[in-house]
Length: 392
Image (cartoon, rainbow, N blue to C red; front, side):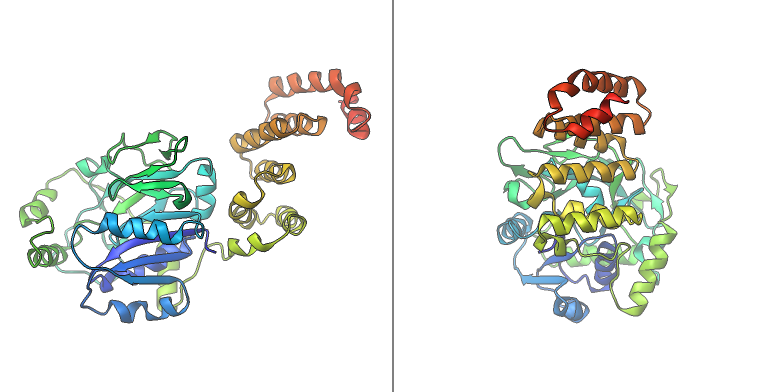
């Protein structure tokens, strides 16, 4: 069962489809759920190997204004089978600023029903005809004042979705809600702009040739919102700044496409851990931590969140991991969860360790004084630790 997936509606996207899939696979997405709306190009040929290898699931759909219908169908089919699904288009690329794997990134938002991503709009970069090479490499003019930047798209937990409100935002079960990267509640398609950690690079215009073909395609079906070349020409006068795509991404993506083989930065399938008993899982995690395989440990922890989250020992391992990953925010929260689950001397000692390790001296001293006061109360059940606490 994949941990992460992307859902999109496609129509005659064969020129750009493989780059889009390979890129998102490279950053950790494991399944692509595509609804094919009557493509007449070579889409099926492009997808053949990816369907055969179970990376892509493809379904036929007809009509216009079908996003809500397709997304609702996706939610119903895959809830209980996939933890997170991103609902985006083929001209949108999810970009993380400091993280190389979406499975790791989403673990920070495990307490929420969805994550909203803002658009970064990109222009034609002066291309009249369609250039050779990668979309992410060819288009570098970021339209940083474009009004589209306030719009969001969503990555959601399908088990918590109750409705597809529109292609941008979803309804969730009571007491659950989505947030943006800054944990600001997300309930509308337009929100205050933020793109410090994650965003969507939206290659809406591409070259003049691409935009002209987009207009011609829409004219064939008047039920679609129509576009005019004036919109393309207008964007040329917007404020722009150069924003080149990560060379690391470009080099790896180019290599994968050349080999015709999708590949990942962190080549580990988090799904395998879901079949493990906890003792097997804990042995592997501690081995990862010991050998400084931090990314692998992070993915394994994220993939088993739902299975083991109620176990005290699981939260304990997470706390150890976050300490090793120099992540005070999550280490502290995990240690506080330990205290909530079991207000034992061991729990308080872990909280003390977190504060001390990260230089929070006043907080560490406060916990230490409490433990020394309470140590006699825990002596019968936690004798060795109570004696250790007395020596602090």
